[in-house]
Image (cartoon, rainbow, N blue to C red; front, side, top):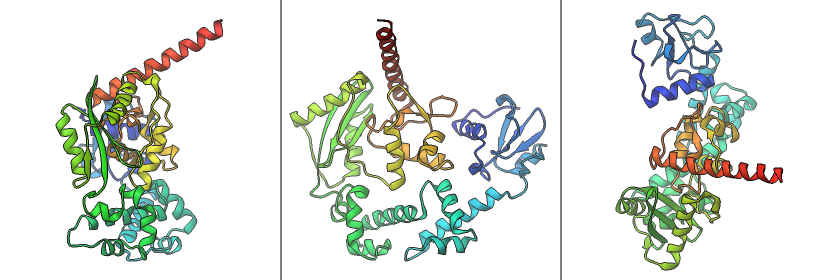
Length: 367
């Protein structure tokens, strides 16, 4: 039997190796040497990779002649399945409610005690119910602000804010500017930028009044500039400034020689969950890596592995927020917004720096 070798197939195998129960319901895997199929989180001993095939559900596995495992009972709804269904229901309730729902009301609505509900909700989504509510509101207000027919006040109230003051306090972190400026496509917001070249190709560095808001890598400088323009369609983009180009040189220097370090003020714009992930990435030392599941564990959301990957993909500040240091469970490289080869090159340089540091320490000890 042929084995799928796609990236999705590798992701599923990583899930099986982690025995990630949160993936149950997404697929099952069959073991050709035994004719048995299992849930992703089955506690049985791991089979050899070459003996594993994946199916979208139990029915598909049984059509190919596989029988259900007697340990994980993949045909039955597990306690985990029921919990996931309850959390999904809670998410829909939050998204559909006009006003914020209390923890007790949500727990009661889905039939879970308030104590266990809070714990399970965070494990599955990576956020507390309160933080999830805020994240949903920020998405809603972004969409409303992008509607020309909607005023800023209407957008805030449609998103469930009882007063504008609370959102205005958070607006810079969520939007990177005031709601009015965001609605106007960044009008009256000044974004300084410069383009350059490094061994990884073209590079664009952009900076708001708060700090660096984008470091983009690619093959085509014009495409990088269009990407910046798409994100701030009506901002004042100011380029060609000699002083700012020195900042680009600093970033390029760090890319070429990681030992130089990079200490820049950052304007990090994202949801509460994304900012937690990005902070965890910044805590990974140069020369080291972490898996998506390790990052999920570090932020207290062990089941939110896929959401961690999505947050990494949403990062617009390359190198300074080092999403290139996140790898698969087995250490192999996964997707990177700016290309796998750039990711490999960055990691090789940083590992070379770590080897030099270790060699230096051994030399000092010998002396």
